[in-house]
Image (cartoon, rainbow, N blue to C red; front, top):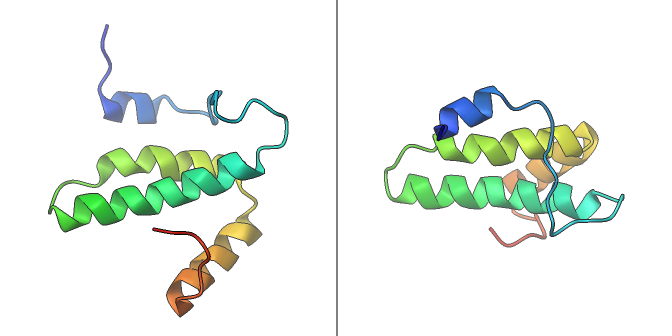
Length: 86
């Protein structure tokens, strides 16, 4: 009955309901999952652990966020001007 993380990610189709963001506007949900993905990567990389669990956040933000936003945030991260705390 219990699924592994890899099985859950494999069966993933779109972002599931998140009780923190009950409204129709999913902008904050998008941004929060983008932050969570990069925080997860940073934390697990620092501990020399596998970053595969972070793929969940990446799939969610890629499902919710317009790609133009993601490209802009990626550019800001490269330039050191990203407004979020990672």
